Length: 206
Length: 206
Image (cartoon, rainbow over all chains, first blue to last red; front, side, top):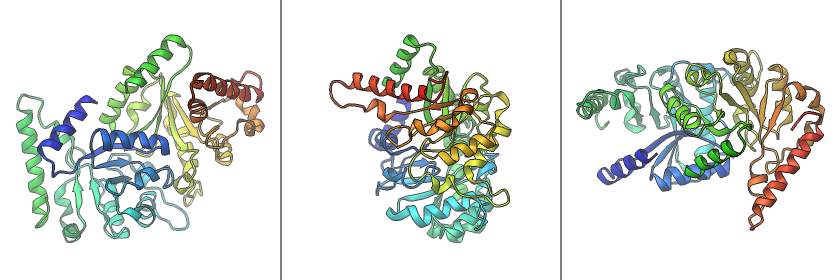
């Protein structure tokens, strides 16, 4: 916890122009959410957080009311086995659970324009589909690198990307780039390679 | 965080026979879950934890492999607005999302007999239904007290309760029983009243 606080403090001091996102995957009822809000935004100074949407809009209203924070709702995760619940089809609409989550957040929850989606970079079909039905809502894309997602596979989305960006996210490929004494150098190299891959997708992307 | 650790330490020392459950509502991919496991079970010494099932069995396998811990999966929460996703019907089976969660955990995930469900005490229909289709799986029942759930309304379940208990859970009605200097006394009184209500349901319940 102390290391997390120190990391946030360091990043805020050295790179104040970069938004900081806490991948906490939280989501509870009102008074518990208030504790998370204190911790993430007041104590750590994060600008955004990842959240489970499952408990519904009313439970999450204390997050949704935060007009100047970014709320990234898990819509379709990148992990192997995510299809067990996310890809189940509903009756009537025949939407899959992840489509229903995307639509609900896009059409109902986003009154304050502070909602974003988490769409796994390992599952291009769901990502494209949700972008289509949510008017290309901005999404955080985990699963790049270690989990198998490749930035090059987003080439054919590049037109929509310039207006409605995706935020590519890679953890293990960068922070575990080396276990030797050169870990800082290797991590920097892995991060720069990722930036280079993103820039190849189109002008103005980074 | 320190207060939480102190509370766990105190309870372990004074009441070693009472299982301690961390209502953390966690659930992530493997290596992040490992951090939660360290924190909840090794550092705090909890015996069980509440989890989001949404990312699927494979992602949660590091929890599911813990044979001596209790895993309480959110199946149908007690909060107002929980129906937004939990009560949506799937095509084909026409099961609601919460039924699908209950069945999946009961039939597939519970190889180590360490799985339990969280079923809100404010929504008796879903609770009864999930108990039926999961062979009366043991469940944690939040929402008693402040959120409106009443223990007396479980009277007609008392036969199944003696074999397959429910664990009633009340937070705010107890910890916020008084804001005055008599808070300890009032909290004790609220807890004892709840125990009394539970005992009225049948012999051997507590």
